[in-house]
Length: 283
Image (cartoon, rainbow, N blue to C red; front, side, top):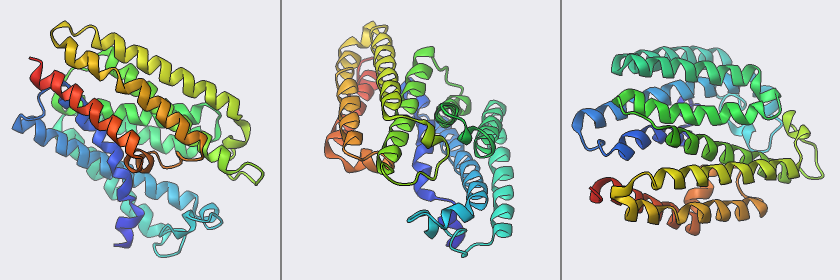
């Protein structure tokens, strides 16, 4: 149970991005596709948990001084660094083995994800902007994993929207963290080098490009124009609502904010239904 908590199962929800590509292609209901998608999700959960363990071992002293992170099993002394590193190694090997067994391309994506997340802990987290890009790239790789596992082609629009959406969420998290530490000591080194104005500019740019890219993609689907055209409407409203919420101090835990705010959740469900309507009913 202690090891499971250290693996941060609540963070596994991010790996659900593997569903995006096969769902958008309308093939998720095919048994072999569904099985490959579940396998890709499991592989990413193992890989991501291995990096969480590694990161918590490295940051255990700093986490002990944090009001909430000090309760993480490694920082709290419930799980020894040696045991955590051993479990991380096993999970990394199992994740890569499973990904490669599903599809060689997925194995390469899994290796790239593992390399990216480890290098983030070692280097990118200390560099301004690079830390945002590195985390956003992790989300893009999760989405690519869904395509790699199921042999679904991913258009440039899909990649652009995913990348910009990820940059928006990561930047919003940094903005919320910066607001929380106004007038107090900032523990994250890179956070000291950001300004609220710069982060707001990145937020605006990411939301704008994501909206334009999604709209451009929707209008390239003439046979599904009604459904996909209507699905454009919730997109800017979603970004606007999220921006308002982080302006009020929320946003440090994106998954909790999206599921906890009724308006965001309603917009998310509305977009999902309209999009799936275009995929399955607009044929």
